[in-house]
Length: 276
Image (cartoon, rainbow, N blue to C red):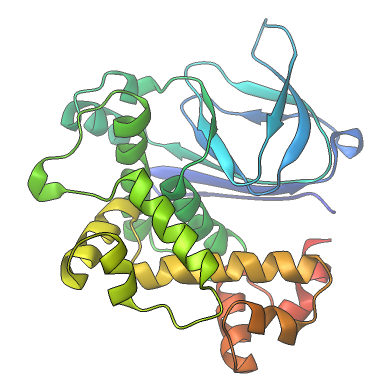
């Protein structure tokens, strides 16, 4: 895997996306910046990390998990195998507004919280990744909505923030996990809005509002992101394009290729070449 790094400042959030070979091949360690949120798309059985002046310690990082970082940066001294990651640095104004709205002073600086397995974080990260990989363009306004969704969610679930008012109700992490499990189990079938709304115990109209308010994207985009991630995994495991498409519910090759390109900026047949 060749090193790749993308960075863009959207105003209220700076986004860094990267792919790295194993640490032994790197010229320098990776550093998670202060007041940042990050996620790793590739899992690692063993990493060595440290904070400035602190000891080196080992961590296992499951795929799709992330964390928050407070005043101190976190240095990844050694990472076993290649990495694919995304780092979000919300502006001070976003963090200050979250602290005031959700009554959590920790929202301004964040805390050091690792190994977060959270679907809102994963969903927002996949949307920023699609833009970073040259597939699905993201405007500054949409980026602002996304970062505020994930910051408010993490502040309320990880930093002691007070949940939103009842007229600003959002989906809980347990409901999001149920939706993910249902989509995974039925990924080859036609998943309907009514199916998803029933799982969330609300009407389709109310479900759309709550889902979008929670994640920053609509339910269809959430289903698509899971389909595309599973298709990517199948292709990287050696599956043919047609087999990968059928495995995630696509019958027509053109529709699959178009959807795949939107998320990863390349055609499925060229995926290996694009990331190597």
